[in-house]
Image (cartoon, rainbow, N blue to C red; front, top):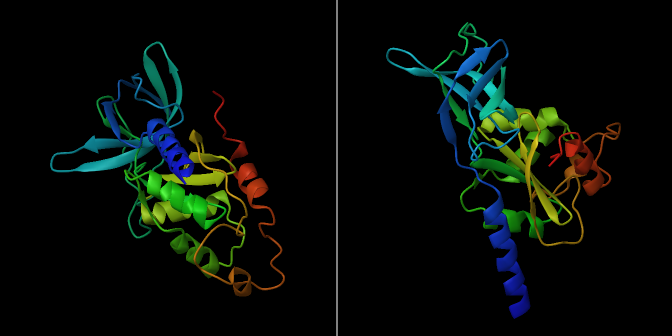
Length: 241
């Protein structure tokens, strides 16, 4: 029993030391077409994402999404893209472009996450270890998939759920590692050690039972191997460090 407690705290210390969910704010130094530059810092994580906030006379507004794609010569290079999470079809899209001096907020919504785990043990381990992160319960995501008749979630399903629920991270528990994935660009930001657990619920752990009964027989897109499916889902964006 004592050995198990010691191992739990050892893993917990490892987890807390690895992933930083705190926002990082700075200013745009330069804008060049779809790219922009900011002063580099050890606090800036490669492949992390964020937003550009522009100030107006009486308000502020998010005008673009950014992704850190390179770090060189004491500057970090950002890729700019459209921020559509708050898009309203009844309203026109504002034609406002990022400019020098605008505020950049990196690690945007990284303190809000969803956990995809093979079983209850792994799920509760991660949600208990990261007290600084708010976790939307996986049952809500599962309910969305059932409503839309999806039995094998794709990246687009995760992106939509994150946008609808203001989440920045999806944590995938695989074997002895948990991978922290940016929910929009699906870049793997960090990986941390977790205890090995046996058994996997398909398509992932959730308190909603009888998952298959919600789907028609002709729906052949299913998760048949938890570890293989989610490893493949994030494989293209694994850290190259």
